[in-house]
Length: 400
Image (cartoon, rainbow, N blue to C red):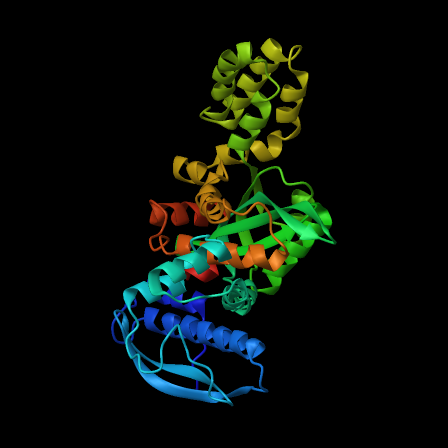
């Protein structure tokens, strides 16, 4: 019986210290699955070009050797016997490093179908049509769906939410849609992407659906959510996670503020603004906010009013020690993920559908997650402080 690989499980094994290569390593099963998916797509493409009636006819198995370990490869067959595998030829028993690299990374590196086809032609003398390459990359979609529906932990001390925008074709025209990335830190202090959610418009109803999805997948509590002024989010989270504290991103607030300040005043205005967000306490920050209003209120009333209207959620971080403040005051932690996304999509002007975008971003997440093997800095101290500030909410999970 074929073993179905769970990419999320493979990553968790790596994080837990499992061997990546060699006997019982986690990489060989990954290569097996993607190679079999490529062979299946290659056969399907072959069958569409056959003049004589032909169809699939089971599989044959052979032992393959690679630099990361051995595995049993199931090679599909056709009824007429006209299919000649090109990715792994009939008598081939070793997958070269180059082929492994192509199967695992060409698509994940953001290459277009044309670029992938040209690269394979140049390196191996094999011709892959765009349709075949598209079929191969579509094999990622079930893994994406499985990842989107996977169970989550019961408690996440920190969660960040931010958006990145793309053009996607819908009903014959291209429209701008936002992909909302939700990044969490578990009780072990390690980062994890909890989900990707695509929407044309945000609002309380959208966020209610997103947060309900997290809840249905097992999340029972979030201590602090750091967000970038998302419309409707504060109302929605109170309906699902009523005890979650919201911290608006200070960095985004500063960027939005400075846009409305004349260039000749920006340096001085930023100096005064710094006295607010770097204050030692909320009370000291409020004094500086009053000073900012006295000095600049008549010239830039919209900016001052924005800070005052959002102050409750902008100032949440002041109650915590430095280690927690540093973690929650900005959503910039998601930027490393979004940088990976931009690298993958920089050659794509727009996407023909949602799946074509999401499957590429999913591969980007797998790459970014490989670096998340260690807890956040000073995590033991941080989780101890959280247990005090959020009395009783971590006791069961931490066995206190």
